[in-house]
Length: 268
Image 1: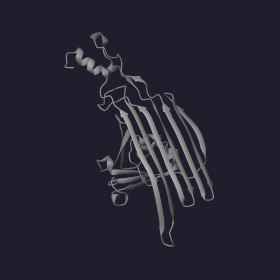
Image 2: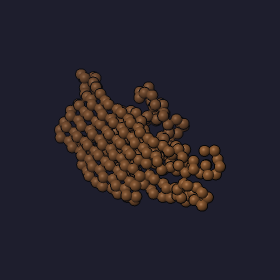
Image 3: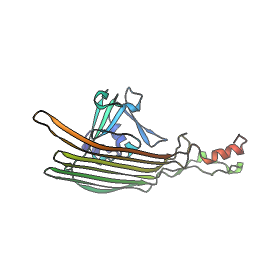
Image 4: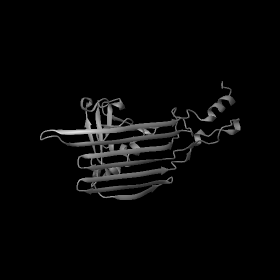
């Protein structure tokens, strides 16, 4: 899937792109702001390996929504078992995201906006001069989210409940993504920093709650060398740092649940 095809289809995130691939099923996990990717015939989402520039990601949490489509050069998809070449987790297929390098397109800066106070500034630098290629990308996304009230969940204060008279949907939050790809002759450095701070209206029990907080951090940096070794061989060396941090707080049920049980005579 090329960068031109991604722009032409009007996709908003990586999940939209993969949904156009026949046999792919990408579903959104409501309680957790991430996706499950399955290839037709598979029932295990952990059997599809996701890679960035040939590097296997340690976690896919929130990845589909946060990875910027503008920085993608192409997406390579391999169907069928690939564990012999790509290691564990590639039993049903591999998705390899190739990011841009210096000279791939123009430098660009822009600002997107939308409903619910959504703001999305971004910028990319693409530079190429003989043996030097530099590509830098940065994106920030912030939104107040849909702020609605579910009237069916309103508690009746006339019955003695001390809970709130309304249940609100809160989905505000922000995230940012920074990428770098620097190459000089046969030496290269690639890196990515991805971070989010989001609220989610649904807890792990699928109940509307207002104290769910999600904070994820992903750090990835790789430096290496790729070049010929004699007339019939190639030499490759790489060293990388890969770290994923997850700090999440979930409210199973809203505070009013316990109060309603006490007032209606159920055991506390």
